[in-house]
Length: 433
Ligand code: HAM
Image 1 (spheres, rainbow, N blue to C red):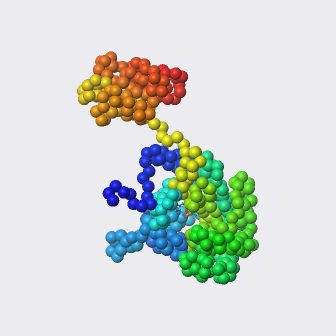
Image 2: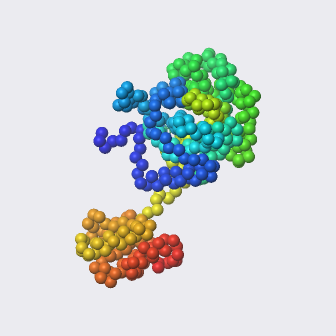
Image 3: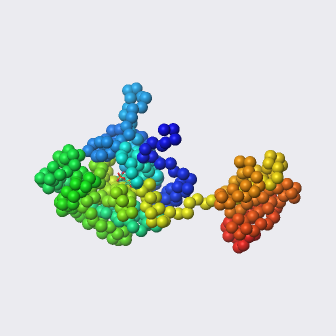
């Protein structure tokens, strides 16, 4: 147990962390271009926030939340956040962002989320989301903007095989009639649906369309599409969103099967899927949630947003072979020739500090290796240069500088090593020095 991480969690090792940073940088860059500001919310919130926000009839609230009591007296029920939207709405209201100029556009990057689900490739108990939320804009252009942002992120990262699937699930005005149509469709087939769907049939028949069980998927394929039941205002909104997406050049397909598994959505819903992900094909999900701010105690506020699963995004990038080169590597490895613990080593250590202060990635041996072993180790670390410090060099205040790829070596004044290496790395000198 001591050496096993909890099921459904992952360690992110340095090589992978470099990939994560590249994706995070792309999120920051794109969100800046789209004029979103970053928000970071706590890892846990009061449980009621998700019960009310995500919805009592959802998989998340029914069976996936990590809920615990703290030591307060009386104890309060807290929950590790299973998703970001309810938490961002809470922060929007608590910090009175609703009182300032609207819309308020917020994004989060690589935020840990927690769901007690059955782990498999692309599905974890702790996973990370990057997401964006827009508050105070009812305009269908806002829906198109967040979809364009999500789509832009995937294309910026070089992913080709993605597809935007779009749908509208109407508003509290037109949805009850659609729910009734769904019940009429499902009623004669209820025996074929899974027990969970049978249970949800009365209260929330939309959930039946979203069920991933084989038998339920078959049934869902024949269900009446929601867009045929939209009220005129919702239908017009949906048409406008599609028009704006066309203007923005974002390709999409209308898919009546997208209804989303969280209760807060109204009108526009969408997912970005990728064929290479298998069962967990959804890279990103989102949509409009015009009622959520009010449900959580705020003024009526239209809102729209999405979240991307970071692990799934990185898996997909790996599958498509578009992961960026991992890390920058080591610029200089400083080797000590001769005595291990005396003047030479101190000179080498001082050089190491100067290299680092000059902004170079530098390293030296801390494991008592022989000179030969140090050279080998420098090669293993992929160091671009090796600075050789020996008794003779110290006496003459010079350093032997070897460019590993070229196999060339020159002697340079100790005070000029950092400058020479930096210049060579910038490409200022063509070959060697
Ligand atoms: P969601 O569809 O539950 O939506 O999650 C969004 C994305 O998070 C999924 O498309 C998937 O990539 C990733 N994801 C979800 N569960 C897991 C898991 N167990 N393991 C790995 N990745 C996972 C939301 O969370 C909404 N808050 C999105 C949103 C924002 N809607 C409006 N604003």
